[in-house]
Length: 397
Image 1 (cartoon, rainbow, N blue to C red):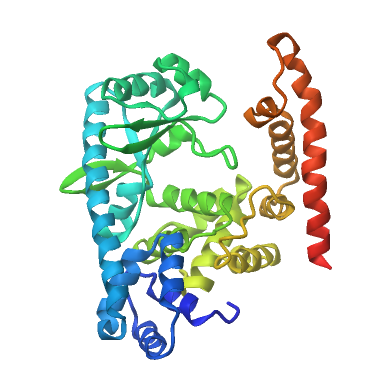
Image 2 (image 1 turned 30 degrees about the vertical axis):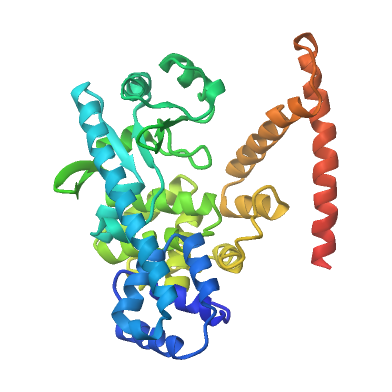
């Protein structure tokens, strides 16, 4: 990595569950210097790694941390731990309710990921619950959630299970909230349109994880690694938490069938995404990669360029890539097959040309004239992205 400011380097060094001697010594030296603690805490909150930061500091040199900073760290750490326990209890109840109706569900991210990779629910922050079900079970699962008091997060999606599923058919998920428990939940029946994964295979190969003394279904480690790589790539690897997830998986599951898994990813056009994720885990957090991983996967020049771009944005969270030309270039660069680039371009074009709520709010039209939104949309996009493109060009000079 390029030279980081000491606040960023401290955060990177602390973002692991196991501190090797070299890492511990570097943390100790950084703590002996001058640090902007407000910046450290702000970045830790953005990257969702406050619990790991707090634990590492306590383990190395707690007396070097100013008392007000320690107090803020402990307050946030305890609040995160309480919230995690609440969500874990809710997840276990939901999985039991689904099982009683013959619905097999796979918890995605959240508590299950913390249990599988961190061995401590308090060490990984999460805000909501994500659950994957088969397409055939989606309506029955939504019915169970509505019966338990969950409500649509988007009121316009409808109130019945059938209406909710239909409203969110393109997004492949339903977003719900329990107002009394203050729990947000996303029910998925597909993982990502960015890189479609065979859901049936995920269920057939599923593994288990111990969660608060209960054994619950979870993704097979090889599938989980691909899921983490796809998720990180989709979001430009902007958070240290996502890189830590992958690094911890490599640490915990060194005996995976790496060659077979990468060959499968290559056949599906996803080797570059896997290579990028592994390279981020190695270059950012210093994770040693298994020897079975081919050099061509991590050393691919295209992967190297993508990794440089991703690392450059790690500590610039105020400059999101979403909606920029860099985003499009980043996504296209991750696809090694021409047909996948074309598919993504068509998906992007279709999404850009479909009228949105903003278009309708900008120019209210009576229902008989709603077809005009399809003419107004390109005009609005030309103005919006034309200005963005000119600014982008100016910034590159």
